[in-house]
Image (cartoon, rainbow, N blue to C red; front, side, top):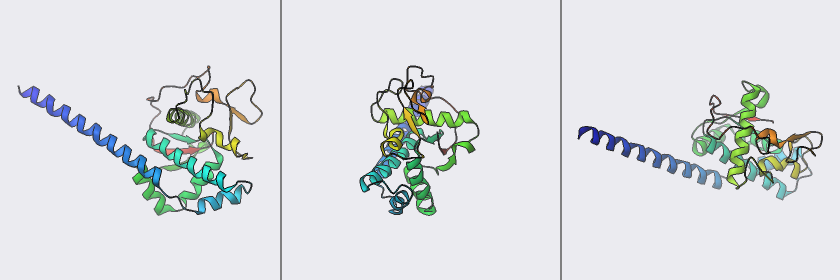
Length: 211
């Protein structure tokens, strides 16, 4: 009977742990959704991309919020930033060092370092980060990441807002223009070779920028 008691206690502990993790995740989601970002983010973006309207700037900040949601879901696994204009917003936010540190703690449960893609340990690690962001972004808006017919906002925003130095992606790789990234390389086309969301890539808690 003693072993039954131990197993029961162990099961209760597991259930309690899972529930606490779900509660913590929801709490972080709510914090990200309601967080007010510094107004200087809009000013910085407008300075670099003066053609953007107020509505465009609001979209950029909203998409930065999406990225943090993706990082929250990814946990300690590596993520990479697929948008240049959103990366500018992220850079500006990081300059508020104390506020950014506090945000990371409450929104992600850890500090999210910003690591340029070229500075990541290996190109494979950076690519794994982009694929992970693609899969999670697609899942959040109900897109099949292997057979996508549209791009998640994080991957579409640079094209949508005509960002000259942006990262632009094409779903139809046979008709992609110069400078566009073939979306099948990030796991959305019929030639997808990306792993499952549960794959291991060495962990880490940094976010990269670039594609």
